[in-house]
Image (cartoon, rainbow, N blue to C red):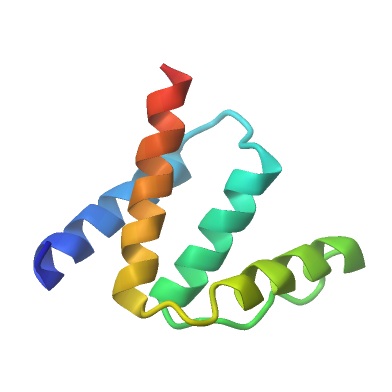
Length: 88
């Protein structure tokens, strides 16, 4: 997938997640969080969260530390596609 196509697919996946109204499983949310942060190069863990939640977020970011922005976008897209595929 070329960069422009990847960016469009990524933005479409982000939009589908943002528009989804039902709760997500925690593991899916953590993966999406870490992939999004890597894909957008905003890797700081959110402050103000509960300490346990912050620890999970930090761990998720740590596990994705070697991903490039494009790899993170691709994994985000795949995670979204897989989630909605199994929800049907």
